Length: 249
Ligand code: BTN
Image 1 (spheres, helix red, strand yellow):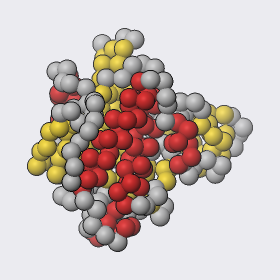
Image 2 (image 1 turned 90 degrees about the vertical axis):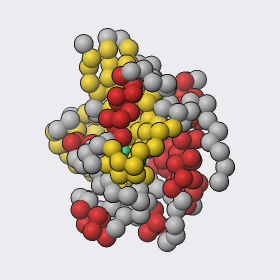
Image 3 (image 1 turned 60 degrees about the vertical axis):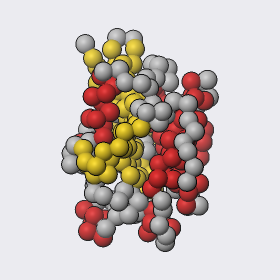
Image 4 (image 1 turned 180 degrees about the vertical axis):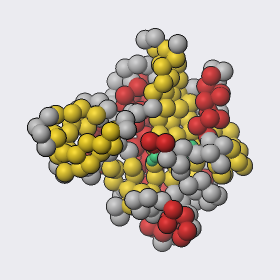
């Protein structure tokens, strides 16, 4: 196993046996202005969160991490697609598997969820105070855990019929995040690559967005990765991918 060669993501790397949520550990450090790229990894979580207020199965054997970033207001909308692309590339490089993405960012293998991404940001005035990106990857789920997960889940070990080394997967994710984030800061967005990974387009879909349910045809995405949904009534909706953004006074 080699070292970690990154410029921003993972320069500071914190490991915990157990936390409430890596999001909160990262948040606490972001509020104190920790170095950009600080990564929090935990073996288990007791109060994990997923999108839309759901929990995320967080027993030992899987990968749970959060990263502190200080993006600009211009780059903020791209963090969601950036994470999706980083996770897909990392899984592909480590396992040879080819995950797909269900909008906004469910990472799927065989149509089942293998990883999830959560981006939480705080905006103060015209500036992003911080963003925390959270990634959970199912590496070695137990059968009873799979039953707990709504919509169907799969683990990397199951899908690859092997033992995926978590340390290598983590290193690969951090390296991909780092490379994509540096490119984004140079004006290069991950949206094109992300769009090619999206399974959702050209289909009739049901989307829960900010607590509301929308049904319609997924026409495409815009330049920032928002979903263009044509409702049955003919109304076009532009649904932005990043949800949880809090406003700081
Ligand atoms: C989803 O709903 O698909 C997103 C799930 C995100 C889970 C990860 S696990 C690491 C980090 N800590 C959390 O509490 N949530 C994210």
